Image (cartoon, rainbow, N blue to C red; front, side, top):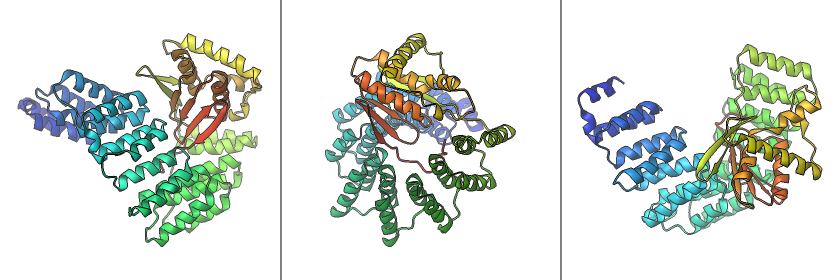
Length: 463
């Protein structure tokens, strides 16, 4: 801030280079308020100034603001967005799942001939995948005007992994070799995650072994992916043995991965081992406590559940609130569980009442086992009714025409009851619904669920 004040007093914001340098520094250290202040105070802005702030906002998880700034640049300045500009804007679209805005940017890219830049093509492939449309990603991949590089192949393999298409990811991996592109550690991470998400356990173990045979040393992320693969397949002892045999000390997230698998299979003994390891490492992530509590609750060990909850209160551990958002007519609408702050909340709740009536005719019974608390059945059912993803889907139904595809994005994992409800909604209302939670894509169509997992970002905490 001292440099900022000196520059301001000296009147140097008339110099675009100095102003851009300063706001770029602020953006890279995450001080976006100061970056925006510098931008607003600049008397002269060149394209680098706009690019620096758009990129900083996108990297700082302020995707909506990045896209708004991109709009302002196009409408308020005489400057034409270049390759760097669209890279920042596409990153914001990927973060928000803003498909329509992403497609408009891609249209601009084609009109301006920017699709000859390989980085831009890679960003478009990534954008489509993260917005839920891997088929469009592959179409771009197949028809790029630029020469594909290793990142292009890795991005497409990751995209298939994100969407649970292990077969396509493995096919692309084999195709890489046939055209002389040598895989790196990122490539192997992609195919391992693809095997993980498609349940291809033997293929995943084989690829992990072939990676070491090729001379590449697996890192923590590779081990984490295989541990997750084995854990999700119910091979918890093998997963635990791999953790113990690693050449490096297992980190917090790896133990969280094992704990998550223990929740799936209700393995109390292994869950307690993982939980003790996490405690020794000083982890205070709310997910650690919630996962262990849920394992106990699934066995109706309410005394142990209470002990874990008391430990959370003692350590002042806060559970991250779940929220969902949906883009309708270019506007991002955000919902929390039980939310009544939206301008259309009465219509949304009325639609949910209609939905409950219709799905019960199809035999729906509330999945109260997903409410892992010692409550009465009626209280549990009420707790499920207004989860944020249900509110978002209901808003999508009242805001779009019949048969329109609905995309919802959630910061935490979707619960099993919401799976069942949204699956029935897709059948009753004849629409495709895609829910992207923090772990995977879930595609519902005609009453069927096509489970498509997101690439597990290994350094993310498990909710």
